[in-house]
Length: 266
Length: 370
Image 1 (spheres, one colour):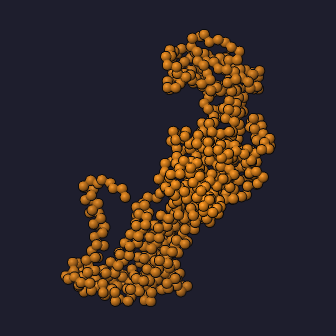
Image 2 (cartoon, helix red, strand yellow):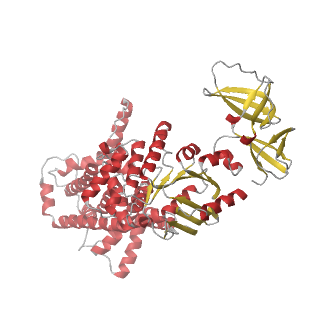
Image 3 (cartoon, helix red, strand yellow):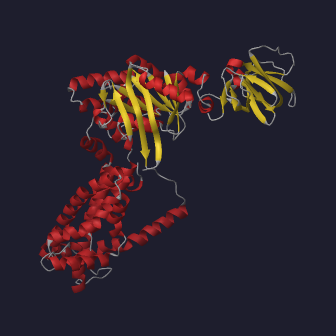
């Protein structure tokens, strides 16, 4: 990444802003090592008891694996749907593709709580409440707009002449897509994957309406736990959430470079 | 108008050797006619330019030949094969774009190999032909580089190698030099022409740059508003433009309006200008290339039969290094005459009465309606 020379006052301002944004998150780490019974800062003693409590908490563990598998499946499906959709909208420019694009990305504009309520009403009547595939469908409503938007931008930035050159060189449409279009979209695909995974992994609002005692996700379980008890277990769960998020971000950074993936579109 | 029709007819029927043939090809987008019933016949091994301002339909025509844009009407044939309905991947044409359009995720060698791979050619032969093609454009040393590590000129040479390595039946060049800087453009012009001659490939070259068209091509198709204005050799198009548009678009011209009196002479503010064109009486226009005009302020220029003369007043002189431009007022109009600089010239002052003269055969005259 290019380094810019920053003046001292600017440096201080940026540091303060970062602290302001991150302080609450950073606070979670010391609290997770608390030896106390209740959530408080600073802890009066230190221990790993809340990590071992987490390890033996079967509800949390199963919620974590539900969340993880859910996010993985939702991400895969989002890409499977959004890549062809982006292609159809950006490249084929069929009649009404503009309308389709707006329709598909509209959920981004709706209040999530309204979306959650609407999905609850629909799912209740067709028996999808508290089912895994119900969750997958609900999460897709949220992740697809992100995936579509990112992929459409990335495809729009790719030089269409490359695809035309490939077809003039004798490549059939599917070969052109596989050998030229898809590789040119790689940065977009990586970005979309990361976004979908993260959005699904910590989706709370909609999920809250759809989960039940038999099936719950980690963020929802965390929410429920805080409502019932104020012990530092939530801090250790939060650390787990942060680590998974960071891992995804790191993978993206290592494979593509974060700035390149999310900022520059080349 | 008469000229246009003649040229078009000549092109489509008069040439039995034509290899690439467009017959009545047109393209409409809604109400907009991008290309109107275009007839064109290009011989084997010929390099033909489609020249015109932006929006004249030249790129659309090229894209229809490549199959990237479906035609709205007409037929496109190569040899005996009708390609009108054949998709681009079945047309066997090499394309070079203004934006180079190299595959960014492949090395130079892989880029060039792409078309050969599509033809299921054995690996060994692919490697050999890729080497040959890269040697032809003098880039064999950069085979393992990525496109973004190359300069614009190098990228365009890779694109040329990639298009030619599959030995296509037609080479299509879409403004291939427009993204290059001036010096490189000159080099690439020569290089493209040399390679084209060496390979002997039938080539269509789209450009808005008259210098490229004049210097590189066997024939030029001048287009405007989706129509052909003139088809001819560079010398034809430059010396015998069929329309005022061609005269002013290809090369520079001065332009004067007058009245044709019906017997080959045109009256311009009292002076009589003769031309070879037999114009009907009525409003007319004459055009002359600035460097074909001689400026005389000594009053000693001899009157000759085959020379047109026009008197005016010198408005100002611009020194441009290689040439001197004389801005001369003739009635309400101002024209520019050009002469080579010779070193120790005595230049007249502004306001000096001057006589402009040029040969009758250098006079391009057009009647109204052209």
